Image 1 (cartoon, one colour):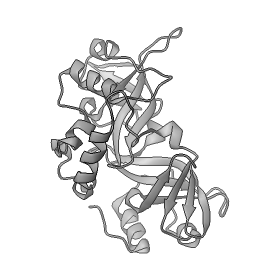
Image 2 (image 1 turned 120 degrees about the vertical axis):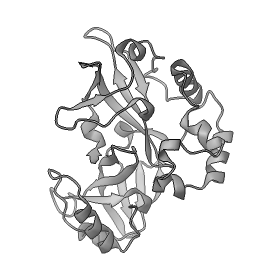
Image 3 (image 1 turned 90 degrees about the vertical axis):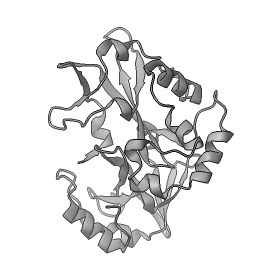
Length: 255
């Protein structure tokens, strides 16, 4: 099922039949276009303590109950390495987190070894990535530095969407596949052209993400975007709609 990343914010974790903690943000990789971490606040009323949870620990969300079952117990999560709210996520923090849980090496290390995650080996985004480029990226980043492709949803929300002939709107949300945690679509608010209308663009159609300018660039015209098949944010994204969308843009399907 495809679900809203923005909606995940506020979901609670479900472990051993009990709900606790709350999702505060989402980190995703804009090179591989995959969800990398949930930022979870395990603190109480008086103190906030945020930790990272990678997809390795997640099961399929219950979108109606607004909970995410996890494979870890409460104590494990509460005692995991805390996230420094004032600093970006460093490779060292990611390594410490995976060491704490005794898991396989983090995503960037697996890329450096040119080995995709086993459960993602058949995903289109994993197959289409330039592995030499990823290995170079992993080798260039020191352990005390953040991964430049790892970005928070709260940061990217509101970025401008730049078409070939001008401003097409701004980023409103992203949709993720809750079976593989692949990021599939960016939601664009086109209120400048059509107030109240939102459209979907598949993430492979994004040409560039300019962090300094807070801008996403796509090789499309504003007319292409605003005339795309109408999408109802209140309705689930189904294969029939996806087929119409990909036919409209004449792009290869990911499925």
